[in-house]
Image (cartoon, rainbow, N blue to C red; front, side, top):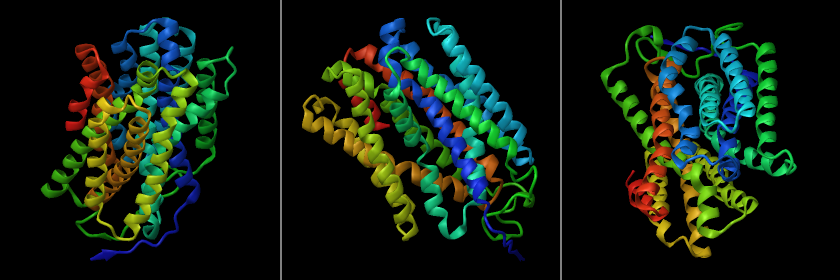
Length: 387
């Protein structure tokens, strides 16, 4: 028996879900733009500096699945409120004692709690309101959350006067979070004020959370997507966390020039995110597109020993950006399809975000360790190309 639920998507809820992810990405990636200055000013060790990114993942590992379950139970607003409050508290701690590595880790850890909440709630809300005919394009917009956060962080940092510096980026993050908190207070969210909107036809026993446990094949697919997301995220966060520092050390870039170089692959990511959405809508197979993206990223990692020349350096950045635009669109699309087909989308996204958080935790620390071990950036190339 098939139940057809005809309900128009709520564009306000969809937009709010996208905003949650974009603000979360801004908060996370406000660090790399300022990292060279902060290392010079406060003398952080490389492993500690990498941990300022990776600590986000600790909260994610502990909370992604519970957050998915809490949202699944129909209570997204209290969870989102708690996350936004944690973000504001973390911002305040980082601003209060940036000279203390322990305090910075604690502050970034609280930001990571909020990032986890926003990183699960946002995709769930977006997935729930995506018009079926526009699903690939909506997922393309969702997969833009990281590059949009990166671009915004660099632009905000560049706009800050020298006397304000990196502190201004943290204050900007707090203002964005407060604005998101206000919107959360006035918007009507599925599961709280209005019933949730399924995005697909639900057959009895299939695609219905009430129908029981996921079939073994679906659980296998979900775990496979989780593992792939883990590996892909690890190499991406390693690359993007340390790219500005690499440009300063290897190419002698100034801070502003390193941030411009950092933006080059990110802007290419945006273009290829959108292009991938169009290709998926045209019927190109998602597995084929992901294979192309992952292969190109491996090529970019292998090219690192030759990127000390301007031409190869720029080519490497562009190749990596193109690949990193294709892959996440495919990964979010896979997650949405597998999770919604035979169980709760919220719980499915929670599981996948747990895998993603392991990648966030391991990637930046691993690349710092490999650099320390080999004494050169070339030493990280084969390991991350293999990943």
